Image (tube, rainbow, N blue to C red; front, top):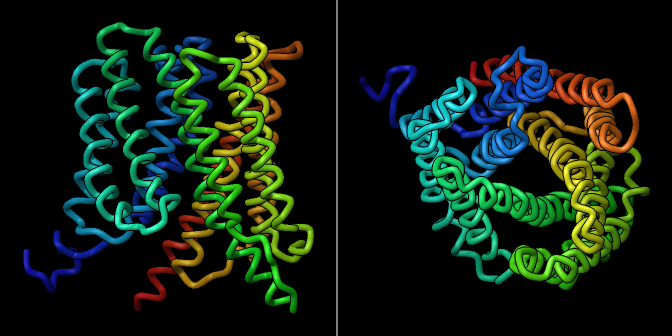
Length: 378
């Protein structure tokens, strides 16, 4: 194929253009399918909590990471990554949780790590350089968790999934702070003020230490790990308060990112309380403050924000961000309430509907931006 052809295998394509749509469509479908699976109307494998967790973390969230961090890359390499991801999702949902699923999931995780880690390791500050091993641990967890499931080591698989939630929480603490701090500082500057507390490196450093220590100590001294998560959640809350987002009410996009960060702080405190108290029956409920409240809110806002900026539009002008964020919070509240109150199925249906409605709106924005991008290219 000639290089002047409209599509060339060597041409550079932004990864988010494909992976954001793939992740969005998958998120839109996976939660309703999980609810239907419990009634026998969808792939039965999704009725297994561990498989549902695996698909949310290493299916949806890992695709989001690929879209956000890979940047422009050759079309053939992007197609290979996306192809492996799609094969992994289809083979899992069709019930073929075998070597094909393991190979495709592992291949995607390894290729993603190979593309990202060398580039991220060149950072000078240790807090920035930590992003490389953290992503490496997440990719390794995707592979090892799949392998333990394949060899029926289900106890290990469940433990790895539980600890992976904390790794994703740490990634959100890091990336969310790096997105919110400069954006809030810019809004302060626009108003003729100055935001003194920006990245807050000391708090960020302690957040990293506390969460990583909790991951290490959880298998041996769960109460101590729980105390560290509670401290991490409190530090995240202090960090959020110091950004003074109440001065940014004219920027709904920043308020929505702040709400996602608040869900993250709350989720760490609740998860720490479960580990500290030993009330394991509440783990499934409180972990959704992180996986739905924080991950759902932050990821939808990131998808919308990056996509709009790429077509030279401003996220603060899109009021749908508020609706999307409220739907994510409703989904989190509904899922948590299902384990504490009656009418469990009704709460789960409410949570699934709110989640999917939010991602349907995100998909609408993505499709609209495709048209805007086509107009810009003419």
